[in-house]
Image 1: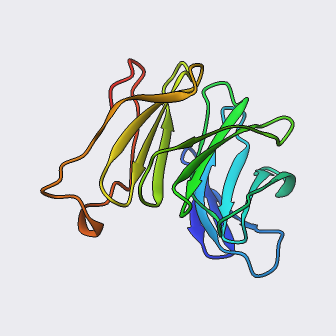
Image 2: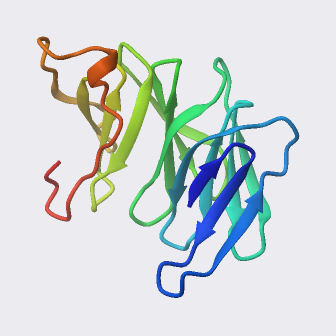
Length: 173
């Protein structure tokens, strides 16, 4: 999917066919996208919501209401789709139960806007990258940060913000 303000462009990479998904709330802007293992589309919206959509029908299936900040600039599904993580300008990672829409955990410790999130293939570790250039790892089962953040103080800052993070099948970043 590709963000187009209040629309998401979905392209089938096999066929090249595309369609536009219109966000259901007025005056909202999409800030982050993630596909779940069942193709559910999570959209971090600028109105303080993570909306879950069925991309085949365009129907919104659930909305997760965020509190304390304007929206989610990063979203990621756990490997089995049972969890979704979000982060934004409150510097907090929120972990949600996808089925119930309830927040099940939150992690604090980041010192600037969270711009990227990625779960390990096992779903036990979550990586977060922030606007200040730091990379952190969080243990989902132990509910804590793992080790110290990776941060190159010489290059940290807006010009070197951590915008993308991915974990390989063996857990490497």
